[in-house]
Length: 279
Image 1 (cartoon, rainbow, N blue to C red):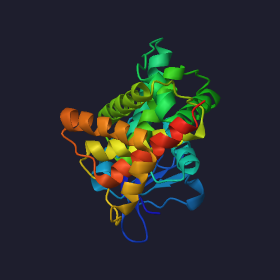
Image 2: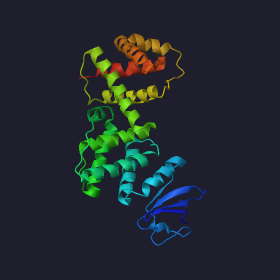
Image 3: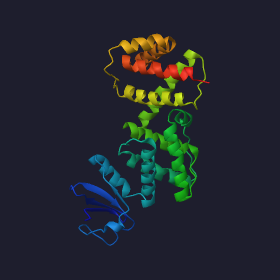
Image 4: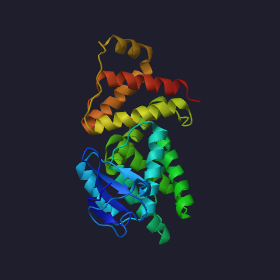
């Protein structure tokens, strides 16, 4: 690997076999080296190839200032999250999570704690991401001997949700609000308290997460159904259908969003199942 640019003693830019920039990390790999010098493979710890040029440039700027250990931990958490979730994450998480971890560590060292007012909803609606957030807190403790509060597990979870959906964290707050509003409509329509430990509530919440994402981005769900199945579902689950009509009316008035017939059908099924199995 030949150095194209030096960010700091531990991070340089090189070119891959396709002549595309890649970010290369390793302890002291740039020490006493200059542009054009060769770096042996055995000195390289990590290589990052970010597809988006703007994201890559922002990441490079961040790496110029952050300790190598923070970046390595961020990469370990992201790798764990991808494996746990079984899906891709947007490259922007390398920026947002790394910066957040560094800031969180600095705050703790200064004795400053920030409350996460969405923590309860994060646990409820984003349970997989919250588990990853807790694991990340454990990893921070192991690597830096700093105990981050539970609130930070929630913040990390939000960054992961953000990366799953290519959303800004601020929009994830709005997404959570929509999920809460819909859940409340269902709760009051059926006059129940959800068993939030059930697999059916988990599936319902997962569906709501992606439904809210589509709503925020005005992307309606459509399939090839000719309407016959919808009519069958509507008749079979009449009470759930009435509940979905309330949800539809609320979203039309509050968000100027019209739910497609296909989306209504899936909501009816999920609501019917979560109500039937609630206990």
